[in-house]
Image (cartoon, rainbow, N blue to C red; front, side, top):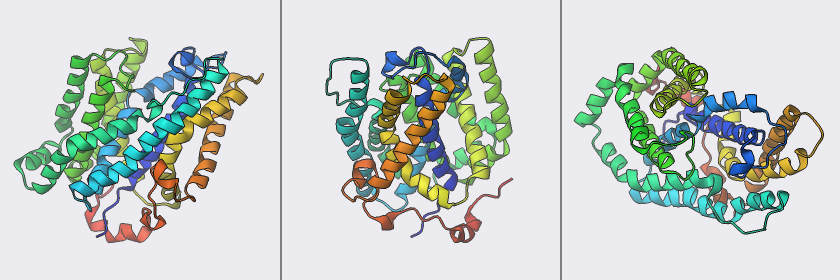
Length: 371
């Protein structure tokens, strides 16, 4: 059975991982980078922190939303046991492999660069995200399958009625605000291996699934009101920037993050829900690139940071070095069957995502009319 593919969701995953890489490179040029384990350039590019801060409140939550959406589509052709088995292979295996073999490499580079004691450090590092995702699947899959079995439930009918208006998204926002009130994260943007990161990820993962599960009503609303979400989000960012020096109260930051995410969903649905060869390639490459990007970023920093050139040029060169190294390595990984599952790739090439323009025509009756 052919499954309807949401190409905009694939694009969002690719774009979010691309932003993640650029964000990590930018930390190299912040005065506090070394304190969180990054190789730091002597001259900072502190103006970079303004756009970084705009992205930082929603770049990780949106990845959790997209991951929850991915589970919805995976469940279309898998039962509970098959879903868990597939996630064991695609998430837990790369997570454990990365924790044991990938993360210690970039830590080793950092230790050597700063003349620290060389210690093998099998820690989650930047792969903490995968560990969280696997736990969410275990926790929420019974709920997801229960929802799937009750597609005519009063809850679903009520949700569809509620989501006909942007006001219907207020309860969703309130849950994210409640999370910050209870947990009191400091700062809001500290997601990695924190209770805040776990709970906000759990909420985003659930609503990612639920947003797709509820069907076209929600997406029509997000599409229609995307400019409203954008305007409100940008206004809250200006408040955070001007009045609070980028450190607004958590409840305001949480609202801003949700509005940015709804805005991104609306624009991506309008403009990105179409197949392309570029997407087919990048969608497959995104997972391995995410896993290995820190190694190339640290290697590039060792080579580029000591150069006597402007910091802005170093930033450009380091970004290019990291991305180039990752994609060259991806081309190597995807050709070796024993390596593919270790980096989250399916073991058979015939399992690739099918991106054909003809499939869009066959599904026109099921897709939303773009405004």
